[in-house]
Image 1 (cartoon, one colour):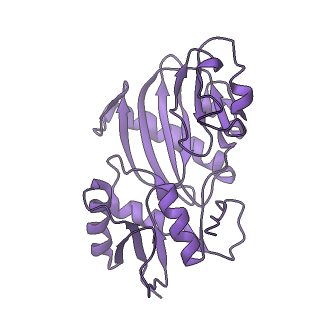
Image 2 (spheres, rainbow, N blue to C red; image 1 turned 90 degrees about the vertical axis):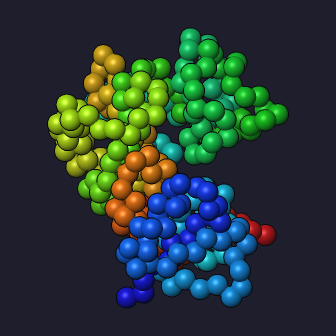
Amino acid sequence: MDLPTLIVPDRASNPDIKALYFAASALGWEFAPVRYQLPQPFQADAPVLYGDPLFCDIVAAQLGVRLLEPSDDFLVRLPDAWRKRHISLTTLTEARLWNDGPVFAKPAADKSFPATVYASGAALPGEDSVPGTTPVLLSEPVHWEVEWRLFVREGKVVTRSPYFRKGKLDFVARPEELSELRSFTKALLPEIESLLPPVTVLDIGKIEGKGWAVVEANPAWASGLYGCDPRQTLIALSLATVLGDTQSAWLRPAANLE
């Protein structure tokens, strides 16, 4: 079996890439920091991509591989019991008409505008900066006491870490919340496995006054480690890059380089 090659952006100062480099070396993987245009000749029999979406899209197209990611409507399809807040999927054009008070708005598939609480839809970016066709998630504003990042492979958590506590970065796990976290994920993951690709990053947290809930799901290949174990992260990532002819409901649209 061919050893994987971890392909990342050529950014030596990125701490996540540094951590993954040492983990890849320990696993015997090849490591290939590259720029957007791959050098010629370039060969990787078992490529595993990690980086920002633009980088991964361009490199995946050159290699003829595809990337797996959760669907844009994952949170909308999630049962209310697991999200504990109202969420809708719409277009930015429709979202700009929102006038029922503050709303948390975020792009459903990219980072084309800041994900934050807006006073109304009129405060969202205008057509001159973001197209109205952009899919947008609108959510009831809530206060998260703590948020955790989980790298999930085939329905199992392979590594996890807290990342925000009351809005500030905090990677220190508190023993008193671990039992609550385990109980929640033990009940959650079997119920939502069919809504997620074979590997994903699932962010969960505790909402003030409501309890544990799902924050969002993200593609593993573009998610920061936030204190998660780099070696276990790579084991999860190995499922996120697939052959170009793979048939899957979770394929990210292929980039057109022409």
